[in-house]
Length: 242
Ligand code: APR
Image 1 (cartoon, protein in one colour):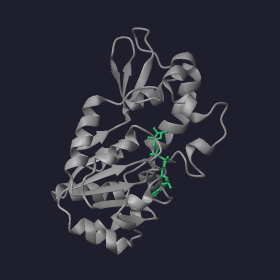
Image 2 (cartoon, rainbow, N blue to C red):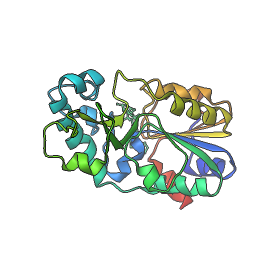
Image 3 (cartoon, helix red, strand yellow):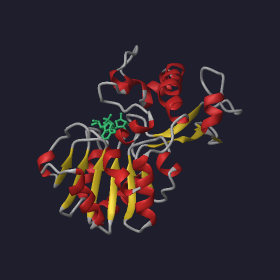
């Protein structure tokens, strides 16, 4: 059912075992574009569809084009971004013992930078990079500052971000921890996601409780199954906890 900010704040205040499931819409208030909003990454003009570019086969076959898109459209906005009210409030709710885990589809590291500890990054993170040949690790700064069209390791291997590209599987360990947290929680908050990318979006079906909250600017599939629906900015709700 549709809920007000006050309704959602009350449910959260009366919950002691909360899990948060988030997507790119959580970071738009940190000036990182999401993917499917009208001003999102996937609605900008490119030579190829972005879902094609950030795929395993495209990375292997067109590493130069992959890096051009990834550096300009993914990395650059992240480097200048700061945690917003939602990231900070979630960190505070965790410190108060109310929030048990964050399950995120985001790769921007903002939950870590806000001080959250239990974070399951379903799609990996741009802040870890490694050589595909010898496994040597590289920082995001080294990747951004690399002047070559394709970043290569001293050993000659191509360096890639530790993110889950299309056509690649999610990490089993991250998935099983996410499912455990979601299946055991009293209150599941879903925010800033279109819930259209699987298997990530499918994890919410493991929720067993009756305090399922959605905080999202636009409608998502199967909204009628959600207990509390607020169509607005995540910051409007979470700024109430700061
Ligand atoms: N507050 C709440 N919701 C917001 C906000 C905001 N400030 N800004 C945007 N939204 C909503 C949008 O309305 C949209 O429904 O967040 C949602 C973002 O959806 P997507 O852009 O599809 O992002 P996401 O769901 O995270 O995408 C999932 O797709 O391409 C892959 O790997 C990529 O992890 C990503 C996955």
